Image (cartoon, rainbow, N blue to C red; front, side, top):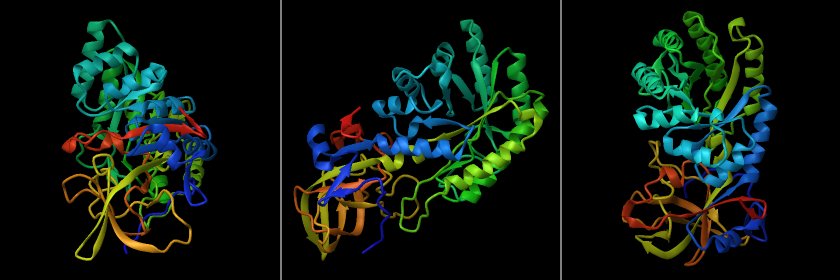
Length: 413
């Protein structure tokens, strides 16, 4: 039997039935119309936002849509955060459709097309520039439209976020402008008449080490001050990045966000005078929504092969690429997984939970301990609120897309 991550405490049970929000998993399946089904409990998201506000007074909070772009979820989050960060024109349109004003949207990502820059400039969205060439294109498009583009510079810092799952800064990267080249680009934006909105400095993601985040945020603040001094311009806004991780696997420790918040409060209170009037933001995705999601998939077959028991379900990696171990992990480890309904005293058996795709990569649980499950039972995969449906190859092998619900208490949003 192989270990798995801890099931989030947000999801309880009543008489053995998994509860999500105010209803059982079975109730949500009935209301959605079947499985596979993602259920996103907005109550969990609301709790995470409240925890952030308590830990980071005076710091703005932005939601990174790439973590989960389910439209009802975007709309609900937008009402409680200060801004929305997008990484494509498609995500920008989702944010606008959810009622987010353009002034609260920032647009990052390498390789923005001219039509994407045009849409962002026309709407009044802040563009986080990824290169000097992209800056010239945005400036030129703005001039042709007779519009003043809102431009920030995404910085490739000369440090990285230690222990991060995905490193987004430090060394040669496709993201952002190397730190030593940023001051000249900031001056170019000002000289060209652009509306300079500040700096976006994102070093990495999925970090669980509070000390590593504290060090990265201190380094980010010093870098922002150095760039601004060399450029001779005060940044109206500095996006400090995010990188807050959640505990996926058995050995993972939960991030102490309060410790990070206390350190950042001290760092900001002693910031250089040049940044005295600068607004600061932290951009989060996974930390806000990851633990809110549960993926429900039904057992369609049970078989034994060479002594190993397999539960074959109607979902799989085409909806849950990350949980299958094919989204950035080197060694596959088990996400928390359970049955949606079982007797608390039921003995465990060792099984592997596999999807319906014709590939050996389609494995959601590798030799995990579960109560006995038969055809028709429902398996619940946790931490499914981030990088699930939209980050997975839904078209692979032609299976149908999953159902998705964002719920608040007993209601569907």
